[in-house]
Length: 244
Image (cartoon, rainbow, N blue to C red; front, side):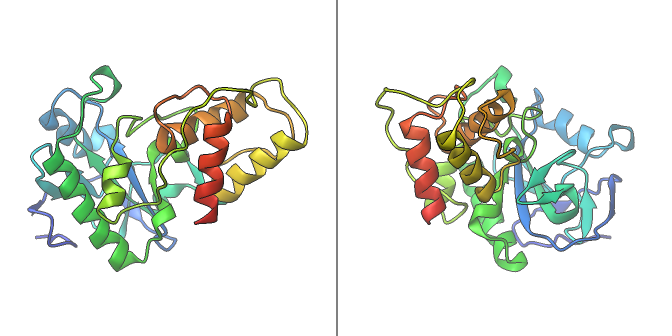
């Protein structure tokens, strides 16, 4: 019988989908389940044929189940990158949060987010995970994943002591760096995003790949408008985060 690693988990519901962890834990990755029901999502995460899993599963009523021991490598991140590390499965803990996803972008219930925050605080304290390493799947899998979504309440988590957050700078219009731009300003933007942790080529050319990274940044840190254009709001928010 397996016991949960955290007192916040109500039970251990083992998934067969895990392997040996070969690197120290450095990150905490948040996902939405993206399925119509909690039961369907839990079945997917604990079925050997699915080849996916997570360490934790948080239902809409705040109930937390552990599926994989933290000492083991769960299969939640897939092809991924952050701050020079590839294969984030090997260096992270994954939390699946019950939500239907972008097909129904409704609010996450308060009691669910309170449970997520308590779980995150406990994991980060025990594992020594820095606030800026609490990430969304969309941050580490650019162009491939968009969860937990621009409707995920990162601000509410920050107010409960979880994650890296500043209030987004207001959108005021004006010029923006966008696809087709090139030069020193583009290179500075790319370097700032790379220094923060995102996978981006510091080429000085604002290509489609750069726009995808900017959109991922906006989805997490400036979610009111996700257009892949580095306007003054996006640039100011990035500079504020980098300065913390």
